[in-house]
Image 1 (tube, helix red, strand yellow):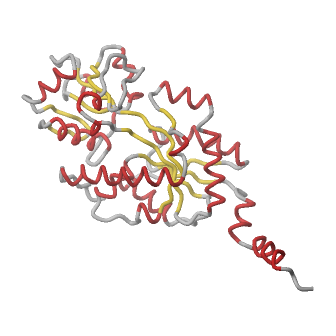
Image 2: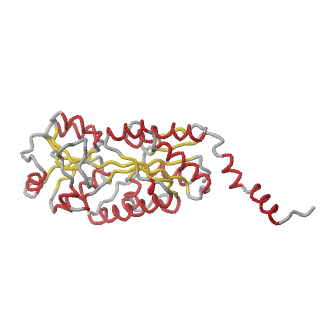
Image 3: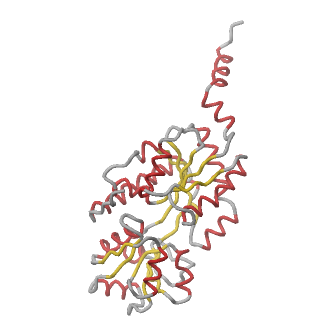
Length: 324
């Protein structure tokens, strides 16, 4: 019996590997790769959303920490994984800066990875030792124009380093860059008066600012923050160039089938609407991205803009990541 054209199409779709995969996805646990050790902000975000996505899709989402190589070891692993939806990548602003920081990468960020959706973001807050004579942001800027501030950051090419370079460039001041291995020792040296200033995420310093142990001078968002009442916006005072968001993004290997991407997007959308998650994020100064940027197209466009933005900062300041 000869199949009619419509029946032929239906039969072909039924036999399509992509369609069959999408219908059964996920049929086994999904790996969520985080390019940092456990405990950091990106790891925490991944561990908050993973169980919510698992509940939506009926399979475990297992967070795996793959650190090293300036986050590029994890990036290479994801880029070379099968594009089947079983290997995901939760990263942050660093992935956009790495394109310019490194002379060569073992993968092409825009070609080998597919942006699933933006997750959340928070501003950075500039904090300083309490013994600084400056009490306000204008007073601090005036002081920085006469004294090269000793500014800490978590290593060459880190978000803190790039934000510090951008601040100095925007204000027209000289600063002394002092690299650290993370925020904790940097905070301790600020408390001890060994460095003057550093950029932190709100959750890293909100307690110390409230206790008066360090001073908060400015926040890198368009608006002020409820976590830091009375602390002005850099962008409002000195222009949009200093509107800096520390963001998180979910990616997958390029070529992941659209039905799988759609399933992941729907599961992530559920997680980002969870009241418990949103409450926890709000307490830390984080907000979920609006729906328009929780799409593949929106996330890809955002990532492209950030690659261009931080690439310019890297080139202007001649920053190069150390060899791995």
